[in-house]
Length: 195
Image (cartoon, rainbow, N blue to C red; front, side, top):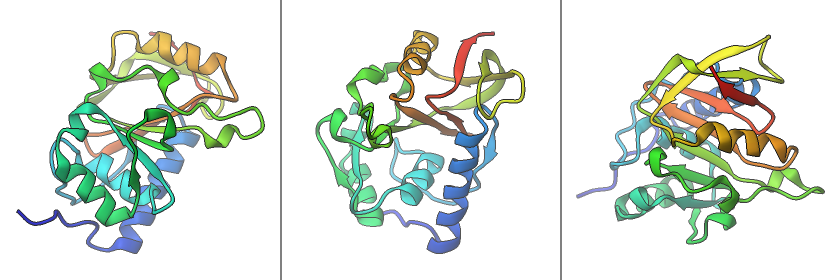
């Protein structure tokens, strides 16, 4: 079986996915369109693949969750199209691919940044099946007032994880939730409660 193709127009498609990711992090919980025509190897979704192809390069260490790591074609696809190194330790990664969010590793396993360099933390690209406008309530920078938000599947303790992540600010991880033709950002600055 041959290697799955990357972006049809690498410059335009990469810029489009990058822009969607940045807007998603700037406006937490707001769905940003992510129209992609990629057909990456399963379990990697087209939306998550687009984000990783746009955000990663040869200097970027990437960690794959067990579901993605079990399929060698996923690592091969990412290495070929980005040059990124696939790392064995979650704490060594700048980008993390979560294809099975219900079994997502604890956020503490990923790079949190340091007081002097909070930007050397991990960004988690989390594949979800669907989004909704309920389940969670978001507040904080980039959210006008409050915003209802939901995504499935997520771990049962997701709210507690996000509360702990916010408590460590400016350290912590940022999340990009990708699926259903969209991306939504949950940066470490956002406050999350049950809605």
